Length: 434
Image 1 (tube, rainbow, N blue to C red):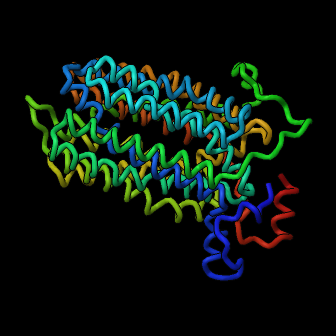
Image 2 (cartoon, helix red, strand yellow):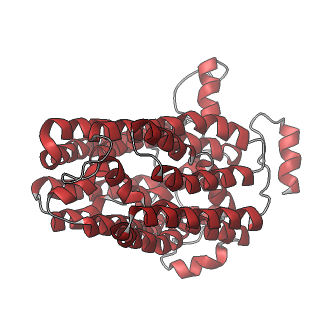
């Protein structure tokens, strides 16, 4: 694709704005992608964040909440590879439209049918929107931006994703405060549907058409097992550590809101609105660190950033256990926001280690393997919670410590990226050494 045609804004390249646009990698297609992320994400986090409370209000028990979280992980895994396949087969632009339409159907069903079994069935259509669209998203970033800008591109994408994550729960909490859990969540899904429609229009107008496939490019691979041989040893090593750390995240994930807000019979230390503020604190923390960390990651080895991310993942359930009022919970959610410290670096690393002509497929395979295994943690988390919240949170901490230790000892020292402002001669010499 022509880089000038895909520019994010018609600004003089030597101006301050032009340099900022270039530094952040804001090409036209990236701007279209970010618009979609804000709109779809805003609707998603207005409604989906309070789905466990909605299930409980409709008569579903704690097992239905555990099933929701387990289903989210399992479907995220099962959808990841088809998402990569459809992106390779249809192109990112058309694939993203298909994914949006599927989510809209799920939103509509939840709005029309207030029954917890139906809600769980409809959730299969929208819960894993991020998972099914992520291979296409990362493939678009890799196609539009040069290799030494991908960490920044992924970081900007991750930063913008946190805007709706921060604002959505606040708006959803206000809906619940005014209309109660049952009606408030359904109205939040109405808003989600409207924003998804607008996102589909904008992404089709702003994202450039995919370039024609070259005759030498391999066809999209529909069998994930045949892609395994294209995963390097470094990527497989990262995958093992990531699985263990995601056990730490997913065992208590669906019950964090229950720990904080409680139930109608047993209220927790904060209200739904305050929980929305806690989520905003988490996302604001993440947003503040994305660009500085991306700037550092472009000038350093990637391993320390990934290790720090795994440490923050590990500490969250331990700190959460000792947080029994708003301000300690606020500190815990700051820590939860810091877990995004090296997430863009990890995603950029997956793209770097994947073959150039199979990035979406390999990305989908990575998440397929990771989330199929991790889905067991989400299902098991409900059983642990029924026995004791303490058992749930301490088990999560143990898995996180194991995953962090594995990567710290077994993870390779990953190559230093070429700095964005390096001279052309320095860039050429480093690329030749690779």
